[in-house]
Length: 161
Image (tube, rainbow, N blue to C red; front, side, top):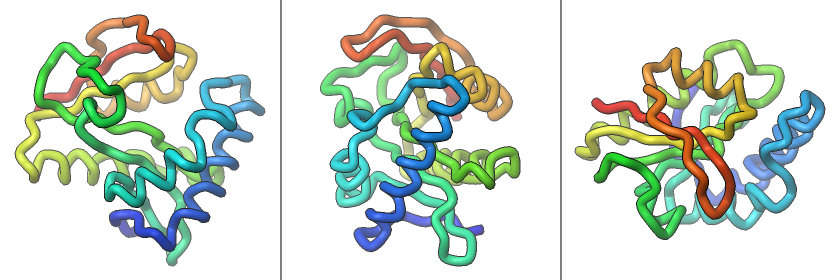
């Protein structure tokens, strides 16, 4: 497996991954994403602005996330801590779930964030997404609060380096 920055030639494959993840989430009753979010345009912009990271296995994209300064995504600072990064849109191809691909991707992204001098990471997780909540707890993220935003109610989790 390789962790790398997604490039322009990866856009269509990342959009296909997103669509398959949305379909899978709907099939298990976790309706947190749809055709509006994350949009194809958002995935494209993640990649074009160098925020997207992928895991490839023999050239195939099997996981995706993007990380950035939260002001870029939310046009505000939604977290308690300042000067932290966030990541979102974590996706793992269905036949690779449970095989530590997500852990590999997130840990590499966190190491990259740490290497540029950021002191930690905060994320938002939808309360219905129990699998993600358990996943982030195992990695070491700590629950901070549940908060209502313009785009919905989310749990905030923090990991300081």
